[in-house]
Length: 145
Image: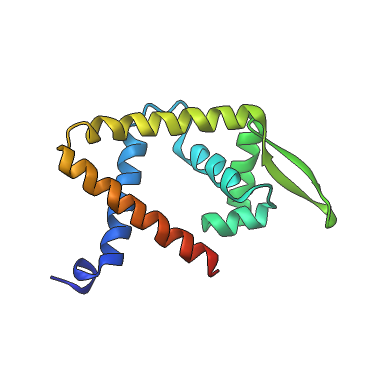
């Protein structure tokens, strides 16, 4: 067994990444996955500059600008003035963007729910307990940034 296979943190990251990709592939998404990811990113960090979104998504600013233009054109995001810098703008979700994001999340949840329906009650309880531990871990991690 390699170190990454024996390390619980590495195993968790790998499993969560695989589950996330699986849910995206099997969900009946009505928009491209990259746009769904961007809407989720904007929702999670709130109004943000292009550079902040690019950094959070680990991509270049030109790439993020293109993605933002696509969701803006669809009416899912809008630009507002940055109160701290009149030359810059902040990207935020529109009401329609929130609705689309909620539909994306519901589609992904349905895909995962179909698989979870095949688990035994004991497996479901174990996943629920593990999720609680993971949520606490994430909350602690986020508070120590």
